[in-house]
Length: 160
Image (cartoon, rainbow, N blue to C red; front, side):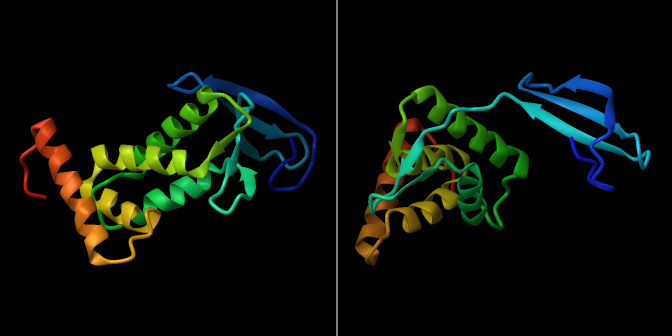
């Protein structure tokens, strides 16, 4: 591992700890040359599918793109970064467990919308309006009506 301060490859591990979730190891290292400490993280290499976009292009699964979409949808909403990170982790785990070499971007989008619907209804509507590419107010109203009906079925009666 290259030292981030002096670029030396000579360092040693001085402490290792397993994360609370048990899926990552945190290692404190000491550079033998500059004597500075730095931290590295070790995770199991995941095999994630290629994502097939609407136009047929294929690209690697990118958790950061999901996080960007979630952050935009949740902007100025009472949703912490920790919660968004957990949502991304669930979606990533789902994509990995689903198996297969490819998956449609629409599957990921629907999963994100499901997560947002439970998390924050305003964020859900924001994401849906971009994801579903509403062309007019009627499509927007149809989505809102569906959201209200699902909310009623779940027995949620709050004014948000």
